Image 1 (cartoon, helix red, strand yellow):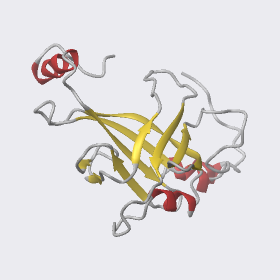
Image 2: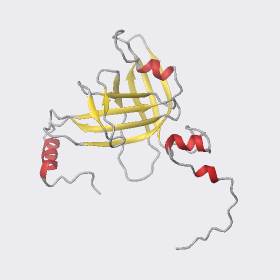
Image 3: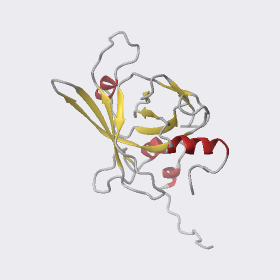
Image 4: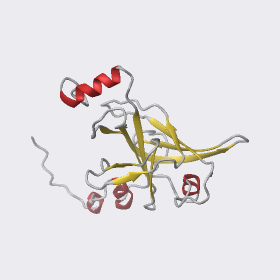
Length: 204
């Protein structure tokens, strides 16, 4: 099933802009660490507001906070083992900024098991319409890498989904209620896991 119907209305304008290569797509990146710290970034030249993550809460994604890029995101309808790397500049150029630099946040807090959302959004300056955005990736933070050279400093966040690597220890916790609720906040199924149930009827 296609993500958009490009045959009519405003979507036709979007298709025409894509064909003429006059369209700019912005990244909105949301990181939520296990301790509840939330960081939002965009590669736009201005701050962007979106409520796509939960459908109701407007969140501001900040420009100029060090987000550089992510690697390719293959879009598929199948469960896959995609690994995503998100790169930030760790060079601190403005000591008066109110937001803590991302390098300090990631290196001074636990990160494994935090959630990641990458949203793609049409820059309204290249197409005079609103609402063209979609969730391109949702996954879990595995770990971070910090690399400093004489020319640059980079922080890379390595992410994956629950199926990203069956051969390693689960990256977000244990088989218990607390770990399950990191991904599914209202799930209490493990509360009943110790019950011995023998009279379940399996039928169509």
